[in-house]
Every structure is written in C-alpha cells, then in structure tokens.
Image (cartoon, rainbow, N blue to C red; front, top):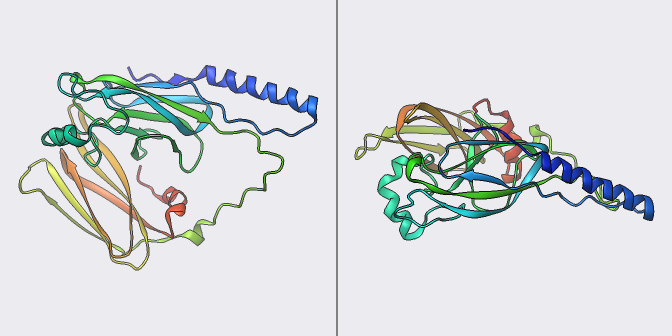
Amino acid sequence: MHGIRHRRRLAAVVAAVFARLSAATALTGLLLAATPVQAECVEVSAREGWQDFAFLIPVDRISRITGGWTVDRANYTPVGAGGHVGDAGKKLEPFSAYKYDTAVPFGALLVSEGEGFPHYAVTGPARFEPGQVSNLRMRINDTGLGDNDGSLSVCLEAASRTAPASAPPAAAPADDTQVCSSGEGCISVRDRWNEESDTEFLTTFANGCDKRIYLRYCHEIEHEDGTDWTCYDHALSPGERQTQHTFFATGRWKWEAIGSSDTTSDSICRRKFQLR
C-alpha cells in the first residue's frame, strides 16, 4: 500500500526546539540561530514501487541514507543507495529491460518531488532544488519487485527557521530573464529503434547553438500494469550531443529545451517547462 506517511513527530521536535531557543534568548538577551532539525527517518521498501511521503514541516535535504536492499535476494547481496555496481552490475546488464530507469544501476534509489515530476538517483546526502519540499516519492530502480528484499532508511532535515543575527541578508534571486533564454532552433533530434533489440528506443539530442541548453525529455514506457510517462533532465554544452536509451518504450516521446547560463541557473530555468 502506498499511503502517505505524515511525520507528526517531526512537528513536535521542531516545536520543542524553538521553545528551548526562545527561552534561551529571554535569559541571555542573545539572538540565537535555530539548528536544523532532523526529521524522523522514513523506510523505503525494495518490494514496492513508488512510495509517497508527506512532511508537516518542509524539508530541504537528505542528511543520510542507511540500510541495504537487493533486486534479487537469492543471488545478490544487499547494497546501499548507489545500487548494484561492479561485477554485480555487469552480471545484471542482460536484464536491464527490468530497470525503471535504464540510465542508472539496478537497485539505485530514485527520488521524485511528486507524481508527474522528473525523478533522479540519489546516492547520499543531497539538497533539494530549488529549495524546501513537503512531499517526496521514492523507490528502488527495478520493476520486477517479487524477488527483491530489504529497505533503505532515508533521513531528512527540516530547513532552519531563524538566521543568525550576524548573517548578511540573502542575495536576491537572479531574474530569469537574465539567466534563461529561448532554446528554439538549437536542438536537433534523431530517434530510432535499436536494430538488435525490439524493446530499446534510442533518442539522440544535439545542441547546435553556441550557448548551454537545458533539456527535458519524456518518453512513454510499458509496465506490467500499463504505460507511464518518465521524464529526464539533461544539460548540453555548445556542440554536445547525448543519446537516451529507453527500454520497453512505446515509441511515443516529447521534449522541451531552454537556454540556461550555467548550472546554478538550471533550477530557475526548469520551472518554465510545461512537461511534467
């Protein structure tokens, strides 16, 4: 069952921390900064698909990931969030069609900010872009879940509520008109089926402009219970080309592109995408 896990204990911890901070301020007359509060860790099972989690207090980072899981309990020992790599990864290559995301290893931890949003692989501590989130979806990178085993414990931290008294004011966010530009006419696309596999669809994107292009590519893939759209984000430097390998593809796909001045601008520019 994919129920939403409300983190009530997180709210209680945050309230207690701020109560203690207020008392300390009254006693000393000092302005104290709130320490980031660690959320209660959530368990992500290897035997389920997307699992949804909601947080009463928004979180802005994954602080640690522990535990272990495997995509085949009879043949492969449990691994962490990075998935099955090395010799195990090579032995699993013939079964890549059963990956949820063919671009990352079997058993990798996949994270999304909600249904319809792009997903990405997380191997350790990470911050969310563009900032705080209240909902997360997580799963193992595998679609044949029956022989899986184990789980990962993913711990998150809530954003600080108060800044230190001596902290300088935050810089104003960049205007998107300064860092984002049109990607029209920059991307050329070539798609085809792999001649050696009737389930692998190849899509090559090439950037023909003299500026950096941020790209969102979505394709439809087949699952046991029907079809689903999966999206990926890529950045292409001037003249760069990149090929996406999609297994169990239906052949239907769509994409959007926008100019992004550098990596720090990606989180601003991608908000303009209509594809989810």
